[in-house]
Length: 174
Image (tube, rainbow, N blue to C red; front, top):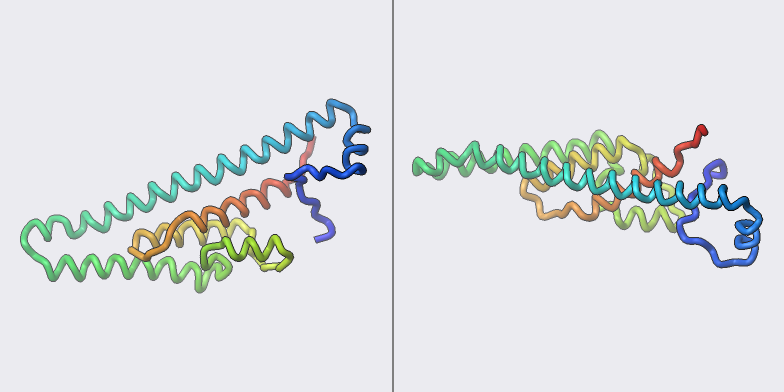
């Protein structure tokens, strides 16, 4: 961790920092501020785009699930469509469970308590990797479409943290 340097999101009001910034060339200082805001914008855009994609994917899976049983219910059948609905819901939840249990166990849960722990110094292995993001996003889609009583908000906070960690650690080659 000693090789990583985090971005200064909140400017510290101490005298040493102010004197260092005052000693910088104004163009360099402006570039640092612009780069900081571009990172913030990229994180927000990617997190918002992911939220939109998750909502559309959940809507699509709901449409698939209900289109399978809609015609049978209109024909007056009840037992068959009920078990079909139950089977599809269990299948969706099984996919989400497989992703968390086998592919990436760190993707389980809301993500907010883990982020709080990470920011307080607890080191979670693979917590901010893109593989964790994919497993969490796909798992949330199938969990919500399967009918589990979970929300997309907590996992989106974790996803935003993954975007933030990966974007802020990219190196500038210019």
